Image (cartoon, rainbow, N blue to C red; front, side):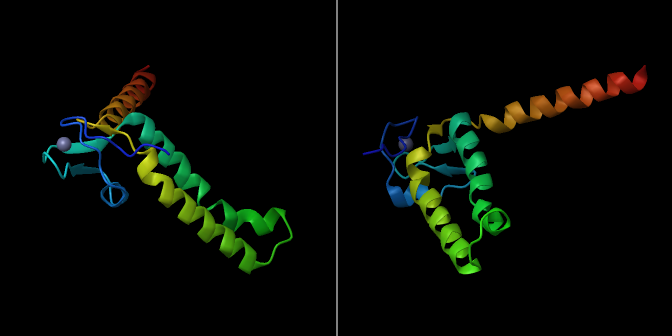
Length: 117
Ligand SMILES: [Zn+2]
C-alpha cells in the first residue's frame, strides 16, 4: 500500500481526498501550516502532464478507432489522477519555484553576457 503524504510540520498523514485537491500549496488540515509539493513530486507531476495527452496521439501511430483512444485517454487520466495523492510528498517551503527562478536568472544573465560581447 503506497503511503499518503505526511505534513512536514506536524507529521500527520493527509487523507486521499485532501491530497487530491492539492494544487500549488495548501494548509495542513491538522496544524494549518502551508505545505507544498516537494521538488521530486513536482518533477513527477510535470512528467504526468505529458503522459496524459499521449493517447490522443495514438491513432497517428496505431490503427485504433477514436473511441478506443478516448477510452485510453480517460483510463490514463483516471490512473494518473488516482495515484496523485500517493506520489505527492510535502515540503514546508516551496522548493521548485525558487530553483526555477534561479535557473531563469542564470539563463537571463548568460544571455546578457553574450549580448554585451
Ligand atoms: Zn500539519
